[in-house]
Amino acid sequence: MRIELATEPGDPGRPNEDYASVALPASGKGGTLVLLDGVTPPADDYGCLHSVPWFTARLGGALSELSGSRRDLSLREVLGAAIARTAEAHRPTCDLSHSRTPQATVVLVRWDEERVEHLVLSDSALLVEAADGTVRAVLDERLAALPPEIDRLRAAVRALPDGSPERAAAAREYVAGVEALRNAEGGFFTAAADPDVARRAVCGTRPRAEVRGVAALTDGATRWVDRFGAGTWTECVALLRKAGPQELIDRVRALESGQRSGPSAPRGKVHDDAAVVFVEL
Image 1: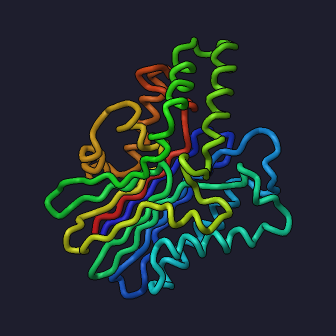
Image 2 (image 1 turned 180 degrees about the vertical axis):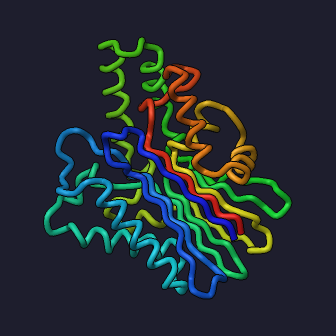
């Protein structure tokens, strides 16, 4: 078994809000993978005394422990229990009903001798490579499939010059529209303080013999495919196998630095936190 992991903050002056871990049982016959992308909080009050890295460390640790030790639980049950445990750790001091209470996207994978299970919530990606080399991208499409009004607001932002007051005003309107759909019916869902969100996750199981490898990527790393179009998901896995996760992140950074944001490569941040875990089974 081969396991490689790399993560890098989008801004060296800010904490990395991504979380990544892999755990293997003593028998060596199975394991778990956890990848979280913490949602950057607003500049104003968000009802919590704790940082997003505090939250992702707590939630990620709970997911690693529960997915490995409680194999009687489904991955949805693992996520629900981990969210509940993390919420209890700061409920006495924080307003967990706030829409921007610390939260994260989730990729969770668990495997043993017989099967490979997966769970994806929000816009991090899981790539599953089959034994024949074909690659399937497991994605939660809800953030990319918001109502047409959101598309209109996004297009209005992209049509305006970078740095202009008009673009800043349009961006605020767009963000407000997206925020109204956060963890709401008809919108998209992240792991925050409500364990019930676990039932919204995209889940599946495949026989272990049919899976050659898996790769989990936060959206700071998926840019190589879905923002810059530098390769396909299949080519992304081939790059990870040949050169490793850090090479993928380095290529994303080079593309970010060499191309301005615009209609051909829209992005809210020039550089985003990026994390990649590659497991060759």
